[in-house]
Length: 230
Length: 144
Length: 124
Image (cartoon, rainbow over all chains, first blue to last red; front, side, top):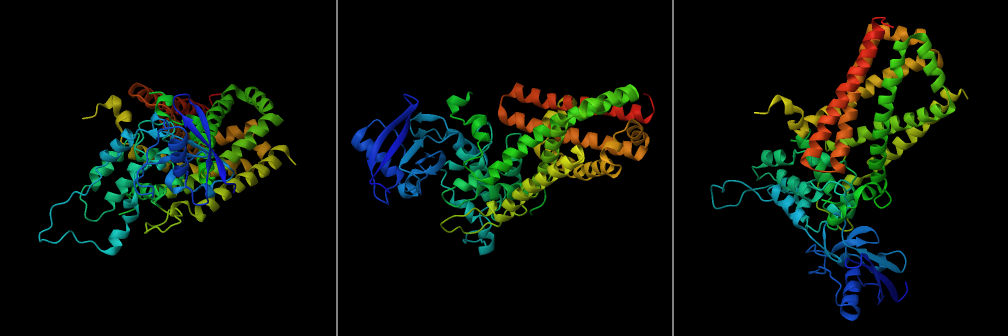
């Protein structure tokens, strides 16, 4: 790997790419490259980031055509010396690499993303076995970065689709043994732009940086609706 | 709302199978073969209605469709039919939550369990079976 | 209370998709029988006028064709509806797509049934 890479950033003002030459080391991340360009070359580059460790889900973008977290992708993982970064597809662009999450958050809210149950009789919390926890804990890892929605082929054309992020979260709460709103959630997603518009292409799971596997959650959730899961 | 404003990838992004592996290719082939089969089905219903025009009408239609071009179309239809059926059964089982793996506590590097080898093998099998059916169809139609 | 005229539009998506899967599974078996009938007699011979007419006039086979016609029309036009719903959104567009696909399905079943019934009754 050479000591510099060519970083191409899509700019919303010109709807074209600006190119920057960035010095890198083998541990340099794409986010660090973008921030180098922003601090040292062009202050006007708009990028959203926070934790720099794949925990906040802020820096999702298309890196060489594939939705990825900029902080979680190292330059050494990229083939070639040219890195092209674009805003995440299927999200309205605010400026440059920063996109609007309104739709994702609305869909997330719509599926009732919280547990609903009566308080337990005693002072103890609701009890749950490790096996019951294992049924949904994987899906609780979602950081709402939106990469799955960006990769989804249905989201590419369907502005009303609930999306893999919200559907996987619907599964997370439906599979939670402590929750009582299962039927309500299943009714919400049983819509002409709900769960049935997922065709199991699996692109959402391939880009998830947290191992959530939304495609699995969606199919298991659909199993409930088809009466194949209990 | 237009695609540009929403930054939607549109049909190009939906169709682009290059970035996400064989599952996305299967998604796209499933869609294409479904549309192709619907067109063929409508044409087939129209074609067979010529039986009502008696023997002359039927033979006229047979003469019109008994050409290499129509045979090639029919061979493509055979391939689409086999792929759509085999992949359709895979997708249907998947939709029921069968063969998509079990939720677990994921460890880095994350390998999505739903994109497992069984599905990949079934997709490749669907493609191979479609090819075999097309070859068999060619031998029947062209009398090789 | 759902008005009868909008029953199709108001059907729950899960019911529609269960029908979609059911018609697919049933059609796989029946279409296999239909194709095997062509192959059993030899492909070219089976398409001779007398053979085809005899097929139509054999009531169990005519029944098989009618069932395949209904199953594939439902499956095919619902598949088309799904693709069209995903391509573009909007209340009037979606309503037009849903009713349009039902109309196409009914028209195709009617047209195909006419062939089967008339050929079966020898009205040629």
